[in-house]
Image (tube, rainbow, N blue to C red; front, top):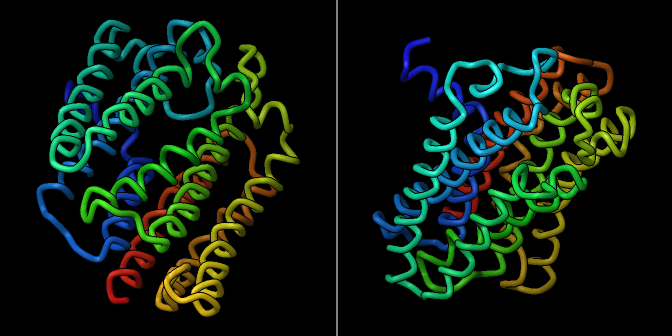
Length: 295
């Protein structure tokens, strides 16, 4: 690979929708757009995800978690495509870009965003770094739900109108669930190598069969959350999701293939499940955003 291609590869572009889609959905839920704030929110999300991807690459590389037996795409540190120092520097640069964008949003809205941003960055770093990474405690999915679901979606709505509607909170739930599904698909594939390295992710703790079941349950819950939000809105006006949010169900065909293949695929055959789940989140989020915006 050329130098630029190496860093694009390290950023894991196929999964970046997990950070960008919640920003689009949250902005749509807000009902109005201040362009520079939208762009800054996108930069925050993108910078944090690229930062966590590279930080994970660095930490797992130097800790020996990523080895030549890894079933997924090669990582920069463990493969030698980039030095550990360069990967670490690139991670910090991405986080710094997110921090500057977040600072601008905080100054324009409320300084309470600063401690929330600091908490997100700390969570980013401790996912696979620190004395006891919480990914190895089986807590990665919880943190992904909170930061790539609730905070990303509701926060993107807040920076537009300086308030968070019920629709934004409801929309943050399926966004978080799909981010969790992406991580579960990734960790299901890596169970053999993670287990050998002593990295006890939730997938390792559950085992292959229960992880497959949990993945399907999470994807199904994504659609249930939208339907439930619409029902709540019908019962109590302004407390749920508008009926047009049901446009998100147009993504169901994209959910069927990964949900089917996750039941039997193993090793590298699980990579299409991961890619398919990432694509599902983008399409689901786009349709949900259209419904929220029109409403």
